[in-house]
Image (cartoon, rainbow, N blue to C red; front, side, top):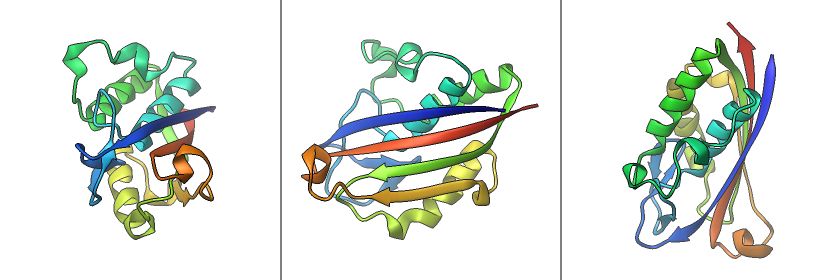
Length: 157
């Protein structure tokens, strides 16, 4: 068994759609980034890579490479899952904490867990998902960004 911790943060932008966990969340702003800015999937990817002792997703999908401009994070995840499978591991469970003042994410928990279950090929019961505020502190607390932490547990196949 191996465990990895992933983290990501992105600023809001009024010119973008908000994607979290591979689904579009209705909101007035999206997340700025070279890709679609999906902090949740980025944190999971980095958790998987960390558990495998690999470098972060920026090494595999550099923001200076125009081939990845606007890439959906679901595509990044597919490639990271291939790396994991080549190493003969599978995901046992993930625990996720989203950090944001807005939007309120609890109405989307079940859709997010269902989509993550499909993307990761694990049961919904093996996905912990929480959203916490920053109590109006810092850039996240001012509603200028979203961050995400994810712990991923892998089992050898």
